[in-house]
Length: 295
Image 1 (cartoon, rainbow, N blue to C red):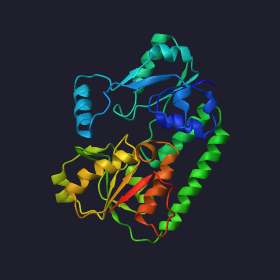
Image 2 (cartoon, rainbow, N blue to C red; image 1 turned 60 degrees about the vertical axis):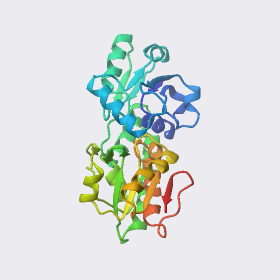
Image 3 (spheres, helix red, strand yellow; image 1 turned 120 degrees about the vertical axis):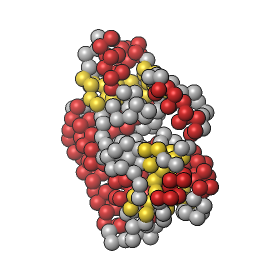
């Protein structure tokens, strides 16, 4: 089967299922399996300029949304040349990835007869269901079963490790300028890691707030800085803004792009890493590069 993945999480799922050789098109953000972006046509790119600060990104995204401009560019000719049998896309967030409606319009215009699977999980359980859905659509349900059993076993190990432990109050931030409280599966990740999320909406969208509102309403034991789309080095750098607002609260920075906001198998890696940050005596340390505990 020829698979075009227009969503980094879906690309990662395909790779984890052992189907990387079936990928015929990916996005500019697809970095798992390693090297996939260098060996496959990139058919989706960002419409935003490079090198922007979080505040600038927020402003430009809002301006483009208000003008009904796309946040991503689809290379229709490259997609036609890839001739996929299965296209993996999403409608969860127009800021995070190309929307399914754009893909459907392109397939119609290019007269491509491909199956389209929209991957739109809102909760942690739905992420696991989405993995099974991709496996089935790609013709590999048995590989999906094996992968899910492995992920569920790892989650159960974390559950046992943090059972009965004190649960610190965790303020997770998906953006710092302006601050955004988390939605979707992020509160559940904190909960599974042995913490108590004190803001955010399970299964809902992330919401903007203000530092004044945070200072008035929240009293966290720890702040998890997980800026959407950014790796660990950028999360550490952006944590300085949080330090200025909450000077007496411990801060943990996390590679959010890989382990928090991408709805794929590595969410379990993220839960394990956060669990160690919250309960270092109960949960083994993750490999380097996933989290940094700031003094």
